[in-house]
Amino acid sequence: MKNSIEKLNFKLHKANQDIEMLNDIIENLSDGIYITDGEGNTLRVNSTYEKMSGLKKEELIGKNMKDLVKEGYFSESASIQVLKLKAAATVMYTVKTGKRLLAKGVPVFDEKGNIKLIVNNVWDLTEIYHLESQTLDKERITEKKEEDFIFHSKAMDQVVELALKASKVTSNILILGESGVGKDVIAKLIHDASSCKGGYIKINCAAIPEHLLESELFGYEEGSFTGAKKQGKPGMFELAEKGTIFLDEIAEIPIHLQAKLLRVIQEKEVIRVGGTKQISIDTRVIAATNRNLEEMVRKGSFREDLYYRLNVVPIKIPPLRHRKEDIIPLIDYFTNIFNKKYHLQKSFTKSTLEFFEKYHWKGNVRELQNIVERLIVVVDQEVITEEDVAEILNFKSKKVVTTDAAKLKDAVKQLEIQLIKEALKNYKSTRAAAKKLGIDQSTLVRKIKKYSLSYDAIKHRDDEEMHRSKPEL
Ligand SMILES: Nc1ncnc2c1ncn2[C@@H]1O[C@H](COP(=O)(O)OP(=O)(O)OP(=O)(O)O)[C@@H](O)[C@H]1O
Image: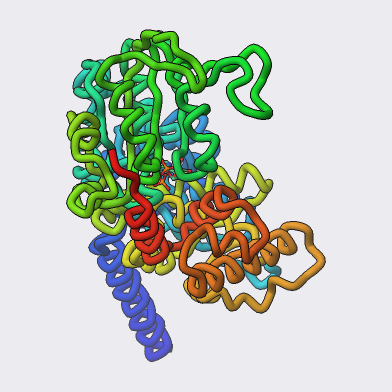
C-alpha cells in the first residue's frame, strides 16, 4: 500500500515537473503563442505574445476571438480562419495597440475529427513597418496603403516622400525602375496628391502602333488622314488639360516624335496633326521607363534635350528584391484580393512566405501579383506550400489540364507564355515576333508586360534597328 502511494506520488511529481518544463518552454519561445479551444475561446497566451501585441493576458483569456475582433482588439484572426477552413491559416492583422502581427493558426483534432485546440504562432511585423503618419499628406497616403498601395520598406517610404514633394510643384517628373515595380501607381499617386483639377491620362508609348501615336498624343484636324474622324479629334495633351499626362514607356517613343514632344513640353502648345493652329496647354508631364535612358542618349536613340526636359525630378523605384520588407505585406494584400475575387480562403505556409522573401522577383510586384493569383486559382488545397510554388515557377504543373474553367484559363495562359517566350528567343524584333505569332506588335508588348516576361535582349535589338533607321534632325 505504502509502496503504491509512493509510486503515485512520484508519478504526480514527475507530471508536475513536465508541466512546469512545458510552461517554461512556452513562455520562453521567441514566437508569440496564442491558443484557443475548438470554439475560438482564448485558453492561453505566452509572455512573448503579450510583449509583441502590447495586450495583457487578463484582457484576453476566456474571451472568444469573434468578440475580440468585434470589439476591435484585432482586425482579423487566424483562429477564425482555421475554424472556417478546418485547416491551417496564416493571417496578417493589426492589434488595437497599432502593432502589426503575422499569425499562423494550426488546428489540433480530437479522435472524432473535431477541432479541440488551435495553436497560433505569432510574429511581430511592426519593426519593419514605417507607417507613422506625421503630416496630412502622409495620412492620405497611409489610407491608400490600406487599400491599394502597399509599402512598408524604408526605401519606398523615401520614394513616397519624394513623390509627395514633387506633387506640390508642376515640374516634369521622370519615374525610373524595372518593369512592374509600381511606376504607374506612383504616377497616379503624384496626380492624386497634387492640386491639379484636371484628369489623369495615361498613354503607353510602347503599346500604341507608331503610326497612331502622334495623333493620339497631339490630336488631328479634320480630314488629315484616311480614316480620320470628320470633325478631328483632340489629343491626350489637350484632354489632360489642367491635369496630368503620364507617358509610360517613354523610351519607346520614335525619334521623329521625340522632337515634336520636346516642342510641346517647351512651348506648352500643341499643333494637331494636319493643323496649323497653336493650342496652348497646361498639363503636367510625368514620364516613366524601365530602360537606361542615359545610355540611350549616349547611343543617340533618345534625344538629350528631351531627356533633360523630362528628368527635372527623377524618382527611382527600387526593385522588389531590394526591399524585401514589402514582399509579405504585398502577398497578404493580393491574397485577400484574389480570395475575395474567387470566393476562396487560401493561405500560405510560413516557409512559403520565407521562400518568397528570398525569391529574385525579376518581374517585381506584377510578377508577385501574377504568381499569387495563379497559386490561389490552381492549387487545390487551402494551404499553399513550397512544393506548389516550385511547380508553378517551373511551369510544370501537372494539374493544369483539367475541365475546370479556372484551370483551363490558366493552361491557356501558360501555353501563351511559352509561345511568346519562344518567339522572343527566335526573332530579331518585337515586330517580327508579333508577325510570327499573328498578333499586333502592341498586343505582344502588352502580353509581355502582363506576364512579366523579360524582353531586354529583343528591346536592345529593337533599339539598334531604330538607331539604324534614325532620320536626320
Ligand atoms: N506598392 C504596391 N501596392 C499594391 N500594388 C502594387 C504596388 N506596386 C505595384 N503594384 C501593382 O503591381 C502591378 C504593376 O505595377 P505598375 O503597373 O505600376 O508597374 P510599372 O512599374 O508601371 O510597370 P511597367 O514598367 O511594366 O509599366 C499593378 O497591378 C499595380 O497595381
